[in-house]
Image 1: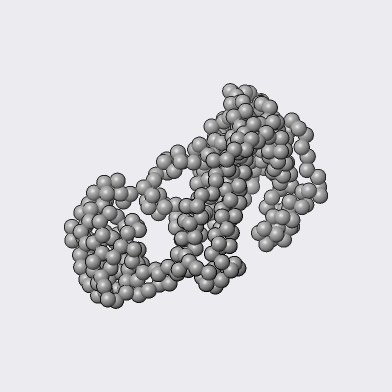
Image 2: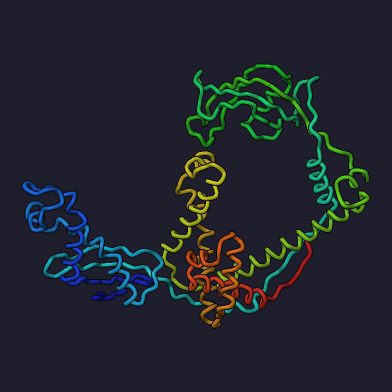
Length: 429
């Protein structure tokens, strides 16, 4: 089916693929059989008109589009295989010739996986910086623990003040007309948290339970909802509840009641130990990131733009999927954040470039170092995925082809080899 192969530029080829007149005729006949029930010809019952009558009425090419749709997928797939191309995106296909006498000729412009060069990535030198744990950090963490154990105390004998949590109804108006998103009932708000636009929380301070009052505020000029940016609005408020969090006293009794320790000193020492372990983990993750950044820097080659674009789109699709679990869609998220589709793509661009280059580098390392994955190792990987997602192994195999998982596993081995060979100098900060 492949007639010719021509390189247009680096990583881009033009293929010409042909379908024989006989194969085209067979596809046209299938298209006729598929569509004839929808075509009405005077003198024939629906679905009974002969093909020649339909072609005479509507033109010889009446079934060509359907026939071409039947043919082009397999035709291009075979042509790409015969041309021995490894594509990174669906090809751009057009029909350049079509007739009963000649069959069909397709032209496909294909973007291929780049050939890259990888510099020496064995013995990469990086510095590991472990941040010291200070007394202030320990006390800050203790403060968080106390906050989690705090007791809610209802207030009914004084007005609201900063730090209190209030329950309010609010209803917003712009020029006397309610605006979208400006209304809520029994809303919990911590005063002084900065959760609402400037000026809102400050005007709740000083009011008591049962008060109904107005708040006058102006939205920021750069507010994401353009119809409200810079607008002066009025919120009608009703204050239902006031409360505050009462922190427990840090003493041995608190420690005994809430932890496995007996004294404050033991509790404080354990917190320091965990913070030091976290600092070590963070430093190790930073080292791994530095090593992989060095690997990326050693990539040489012309990488097709479409690979970056595809990765950006995948990342946005992943974001949309995660947002859906929170009850949001992507458009709503962009409205909340003031982003557009283009600015969202720009946000992910740098990360996408690094991921594409790193994957190419690691695959090249696998090839150059003959890293292989045994059948037993492959089965073990399938088993891990099965346990992770609670899915039978056979189902996992249907979703993840063996060749893809083998390559992913080999790439994982490559990462471990490169990390093990790196030279790491440790410094304390």
